[in-house]
Length: 413
Image (cartoon, rainbow, N blue to C red):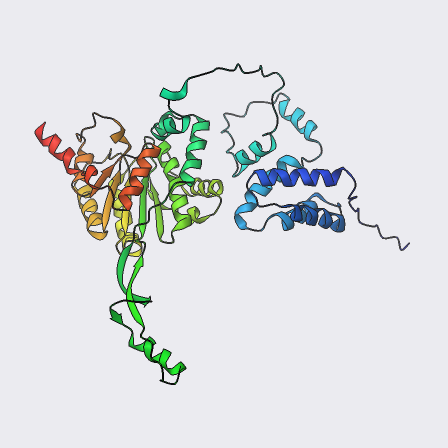
């Protein structure tokens, strides 16, 4: 013996191996692609690395189970909940002990992935005291399913479970497939535009004995989408749900720019490019300092037109303006900035949750001013409204959302 202490190795036949298997099962239910091969590798890695410190054990499992950046937040939350450190009971007793009041404390925000990890860990558990549910036979021929009811339900009236289901349906929603032709040319199998350069280059391969004609066509791309979303107090609930739609849209399309505004304008395009939706929205909340505050539409549009318009409004961009139009500062700047934004984009779509009311009328000064400079006016308060928005982006349903009809109604009144 040389006096050195041997590292504590893991016994493959002990309880630790079973716990690693259960931990991998939790990760799989939470959304991580963990298979049997990864579980075997994790047990072998822990057996080799040993159990000297908790951090070593954490990073050993992290190296095996986490393959993408977006999986880190879910793994971290699952590890902290599954492998609880020692002294947990003592910490809970200390928290329950009476202490001197130190003023009101804000509730701690939930971490990214915590809800999915909690559901994965306790999905198989059934409360012991829960009474058995009675079996009720219902004739469902003249009823609607819960999913159909959820499609037209207002986001502001949904419960927490219904909001979670709505977020899942938004992630599975069919996204728009709109496309425009640019002036750039791309190689094509056949067409009417002759490509002399590619034809000559192809003939050199055969020594000029065989000349195969090459063609070009105009390149078809998805136009950029720019979302300018109001996060004031009256729009907070709808904005949070719409951010899930923007996150799903950003995953499938490259040129999507997202901005949030209350009393100031904030660019959250980079935050929404994070793969995990919970982590993406958490980073958006951290980047914004004026959430659920006041509204300054004119100043926000001025900041966008001045600093961001030339960067993101090129190549026929479509702008989605999400706000209720209730402007606090009524002056001529709002009309000027709306007109400038309208002239800089291919199509300006205004998404207003106030359209959920059947008796909606354009009486407010800000609403009437904005209506004169938009191409499409649509509601954005339910899943059905989001599907209509997808159809509008595809160009299939634009005639039923003409904003001028509200202006004509106001003049008639």
